[in-house]
Length: 92
Image 1 (spheres, rainbow, N blue to C red):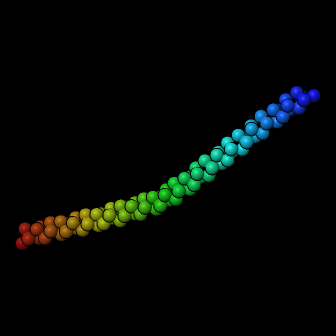
Image 2 (image 1 turned 180 degrees about the horizontal axis):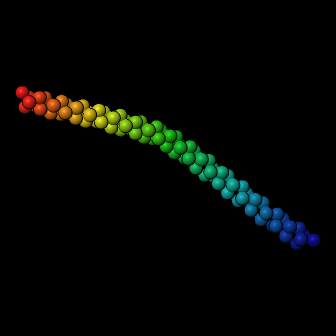
Image 3 (image 1 turned 90 degrees about the vertical axis):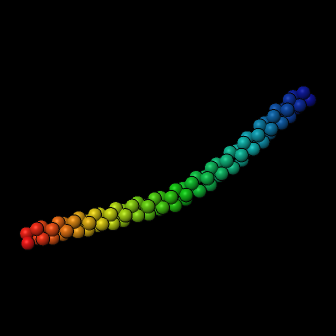
């Protein structure tokens, strides 16, 4: 009878040990998941900031392109005006 009791106590001890190991693993995994979630949130915030910067840079590029086109049109009209005045002078 005593042997059976010791066997049952041994089995219970093994089961309790396994339960403790399982609890420790679950806690560690939970901490790692929380760390990963925090890292993902930081990365998402950084991506949003960078996306805003990128949109600003794209808008700046559009503004520069527009300014260059205006300057080209102005230079072209000045060349045409200069060409027209040369023709007028040649006719005189």
